[in-house]
Image 1: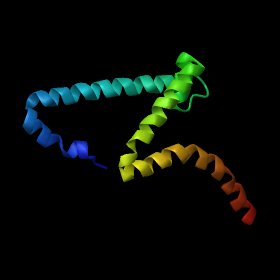
Image 2: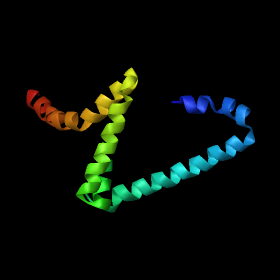
Image 3: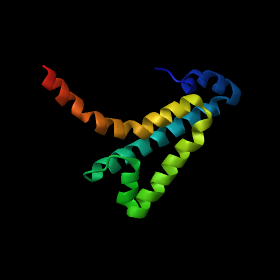
Length: 112
């Protein structure tokens, strides 16, 4: 799947010149580094499954609270876009749906 960012890269390079390609590479390296840090954080301790869990591991219960507030505030602020609203609802309810639908394989097994 190709995103809009990748499709707009030639136009961006045409507008800013070759220096833009250097910035693009630099931000790619930064994103790769932060992704490796996130991977390390998720694997550093058992039971870390979400960003608030990382906040709690780093800063205690206040870290969990602050990260949760920031995460959900960002989701609620982006309500002006209908597709973002749909994605937000899916993200907020994903864990709840997973927990609620955990018993379905058991019910399907009983039917056979």
